[in-house]
Length: 76
Image (tube, rainbow, N blue to C red):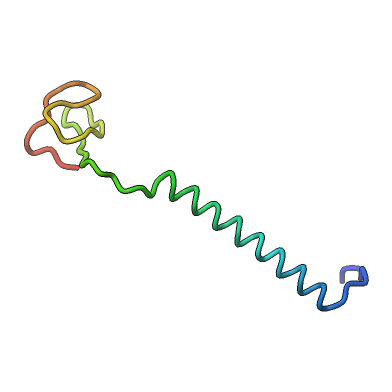
């Protein structure tokens, strides 16, 4: 079972194949850029889990979510 010929020369077929591959590569690169923008940023503030509620919160004296004091031994 073969596809019907549409009269494209081998050079034209190669050019179309190259164009499709470049478009696919550009789409993949765009997806990686979106993921990196959403999840790849370096956090400047250290965060830990609150021992009371488990929320991620900056290291300071109280939790931003439940407002309970953070213990000294809180781990991230």
